[in-house]
Length: 411
Ligand code: HEM
Image 1 (cartoon, rainbow, N blue to C red):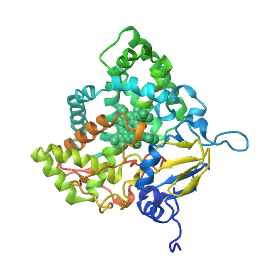
Image 2 (image 1 turned 30 degrees about the vertical axis):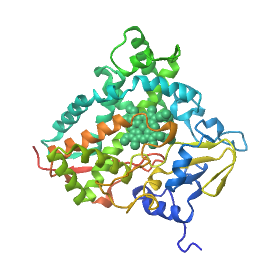
Image 3 (image 1 turned 180 degrees about the vertical axis):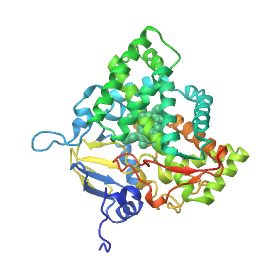
Image 4 (image 1 turned 90 degrees about the horizontal axis):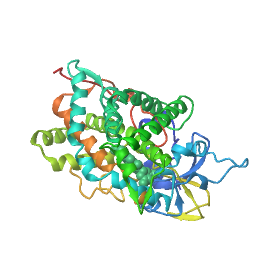
């Protein structure tokens, strides 16, 4: 039977390096019932094959109303949707047919052409942010680089005027510092964002521009338009799904390079040669190796079902552990190694099935531009802290660093 005891989950050590615990779970308890720090019981799905099936299983609903209620009739997931239905009735909390309709509408405004046209702007942002600290010889890569880049990029994409972008940056910063849902200070920022978006959408209806919000308002599906509320919820999901994820992609990837100097050298030589193919596959491998989304967002069984031989009851929450699946040795050769030349890298970092990341093209563009620019402009950038002293955020869904102090030759 199991020789080693089950690992303790959700501790400080686990937040720093969850991968040994995930290896244990994959081997000994691949579909694992656990009590989350919030007190809610949920299943963790850790093997690649089970994870991929679960992500595409229509019996697993995204609607929090499908969570089995406790004795007092309250759902205890803490999902914001249960309290503030408006902004939270978004893609990640709904099922077909509403999901199909809204996703089709937003896809029209979120075309690959829109994203590709955004390349020069993302490059300009990356350069400007590096300009701001390049002379100092030191920086906090999270605070000075990874954090502002996606927020300004998303503001531009949505059409938030430049003079309002710093307010947006403050509200979004508040949201992630307090871990996501609308509690405490977060509630205030969500309220501000909600009021701001409602007003912005109203202005864009009157005077449309060449931005995503105007595109969303224009987009129609069989004559059906987005309601004001749907448009606001869509902007909100784009903001919160596209912001902290991208911060973590940049932060986790830079960290991975500091800890894996030989792969960093491979990356820097590709940057010098302008080897586009390697730069693209590198970003995919960084996502597999230590991606921003540790667990996919909540799912709830709408009927009793079997996952990998384990019986799940109707109403049970199911969390698919992308970080565990993407290091499954049954799917990836030497999964614990960062290997930028890895082929056949069908990782689950962007999810799978109908909720597959809508923003993947933008995330790839931002991740690649940020890393390429950083290692090209500051070629000797290095960690300025003991790796064991780095603090990880320890939230449930995301994996990312609080700070990443670096030093380099000032330029
Ligand atoms: C969905 C990952 C960046 C917008 C998802 C999901 C994952 C993911 C795993 C599926 C969640 C689930 O099934 O429970 C990532 C990663 C990113 C990233 C790793 C960065 C590296 C972005 C960006 C945007 C974005 C930049 C937009 C600007 C969305 C939206 C959804 C989504 C709207 C919901 C799609 C739906 O439910 O149909 N993302 N994401 N993401 N992502 Fe991303």
